[in-house]
Length: 77
Image (cartoon, rainbow, N blue to C red; front, side):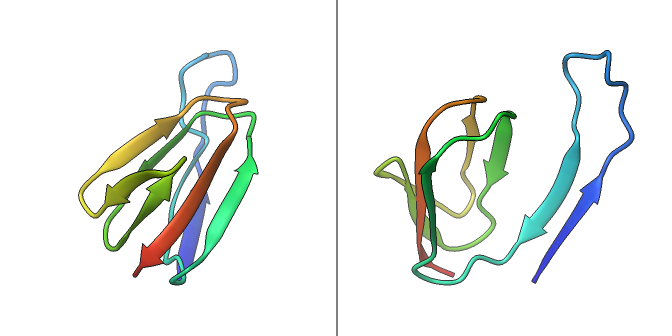
């Protein structure tokens, strides 16, 4: 299940949130390697996986700056 919401924001403000959402990631899913042109903040609510070969698990978060190459893999739901 997933849900994303666009947020009203001032486009002149360099620090703003454009989207908020959540997504249930299937076991053994992956994304990348690739990059996006926005800052991304992820918070892991359940399960575990890897971001650029570094382990991540429920209760942790990570930040990806714009235009940075990264890869996510998910082991557990």
